[in-house]
Length: 125
Image (cartoon, rainbow, N blue to C red; front, side):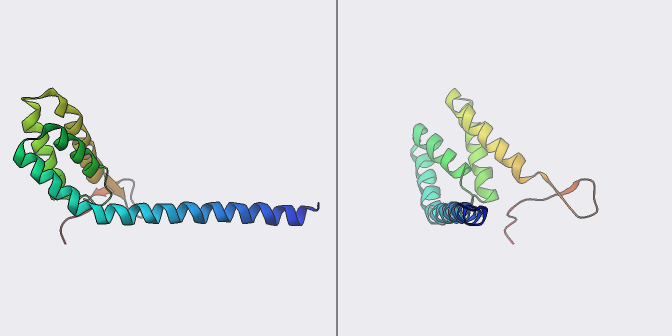
């Protein structure tokens, strides 16, 4: 076999794998966007009813959701801080929320600067 067809086949396979990965990522983002409002309602219900295991599991799902809003993250973090005083199992939720807050508040680099400007992903604008 010549080098030309082998190279063409290798590039074609690589391109198909890359397109497949992008389609999978697109579908994952689309699914997260659709599920987010339902998860938030479920979290509010769990907090209202005092269901600790549901608060932790749904809170972690929300924290790892790409579309988490800043005000919801603040509510999750405050709830975890309040409940951690009574139940130690909320420590992981509090730490996850804290780390996500650090991620949102990280300095983003700008052109011509050596650092970045502190910004949040979602300011409600």
